[in-house]
Length: 217
Image 1 (cartoon, rainbow, N blue to C red):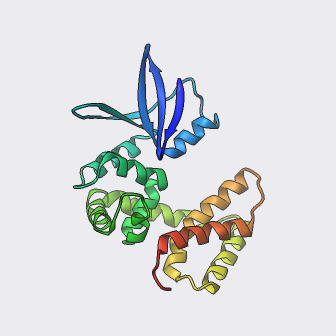
Image 2: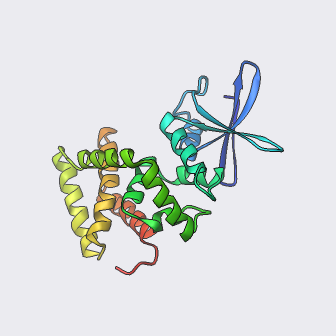
């Protein structure tokens, strides 16, 4: 790796490959890890998608084959360009997108810059068809994530559910945010960091409020 930079909401890395420099657009989470030196900056492996245009050659880099496959499938949807595909991956994991597609969560998809209501409808419809088996597998994965073995995390999640319910969030909304809270609590626990009820509640409310838009509860 030679250099990292950000241009508005686009994130780039310049990689030296056998003496040639390649400018590659990457997703934000990977950019931040590189910037914080959480990933070795000497040897970087990326799955590349090359898009050739009349006046330029664009390279998009992904840390997994699944991310690249998802990006390519997104580009095959009418009206969806490369920057919308990257914006979607910048804001959400593939798992979160699949969950939104499964639950017809148009407001979450619409929260991505450049995606309006009509495009959201089209994305959900076509992604359901393109990733039918993956979405079913994600359902099973979510079920496994909801099995909490740690009693401290179990109590914390139960308290969060009760609090969110008292704040008039719907049961379906709370159910959708549970895997995110459990995953975050598990990460904190493994890193031996303090499990803060207040921070997890704030995380849940931020997600739910962005998710729900202006829908009345």
